[in-house]
Image (cartoon, rainbow, N blue to C red; front, top):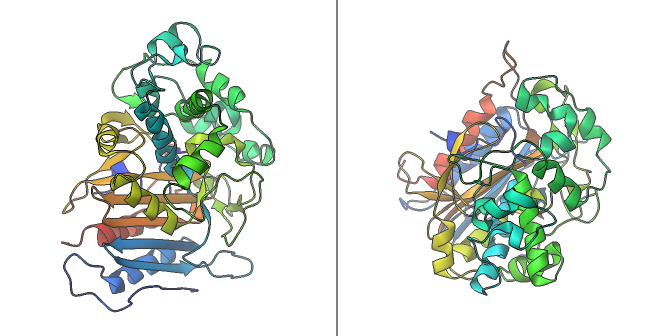
Length: 401
């Protein structure tokens, strides 16, 4: 899910309990990790207003992980670098990989109409015009189902009234994939193939059903066996219950000041997220996934090059992004081109950025989402957390700076 400016600075906008692994001494290598600055950067994020933040940064074989702040505002329990986290739309890269594996095997044609595979889900003219590629790179024209599944949030998109009522009403609701797809497919839509595209979780819900249709295996099972296991990830899974397993933080949602004080949504039925944003993982696992992906260990290199063919897309926060097949292209001043994804769910945000060869990596998680208060017009305003995160990204990924 990505709505409005999120706590984790969107890729397009980039211009006390602590634990550290690897060397804590400042590295002398220009391409290595300045661990003193990295540690100070995480502390700055906490001081800017995040209860807890944790990250893993890699430069070749050098690995640094650290955490700053608390996992629970009531008890003061500290965050740790190994905590499980709802990684939100970072899940989209996993889903895109699952589709591209089927493309490699000749079971899916990227430029075939989705109606050839799933006419019952995307019927009629839309099914004939929307291709599989358009779903993956968000140029299908289909709107997001979020404001329809959570009607009290619709005002975030339309400028109307906003409340947390839907968040609370749906905490333990079990959404069915076809239900969510119908909400997006039956809503007013744009013309397929129009640029810039419009980011939409409806697209990835449909892709999840496409994987199930072509493999004969439930989507979550396929991704677990053919993507997660192939990457050697030990702490990544689709949860089957509202409660998170293993060490994790509480997840505080502010909803741009509509929830004050921020409320814990760490216990939440994940069925509304699914192929678009449903995974739980650790920052170490996320980094390992992208390193294996960019090394050609999960899909072949020709497929990876296709995934890096980008088009202009408008994110749900209104920001322009360069989007490929499940990958963002990100350019920071003083950095080589970076690739990855960001993600947000109720109460949690993640940013994951990587060099093209996967040797320089950063994944960072925070346990507060959407703290940006509105101005007089209702538009969410920048928050000091945004600047602190952006500074950390540059420290982690731009060693020349």
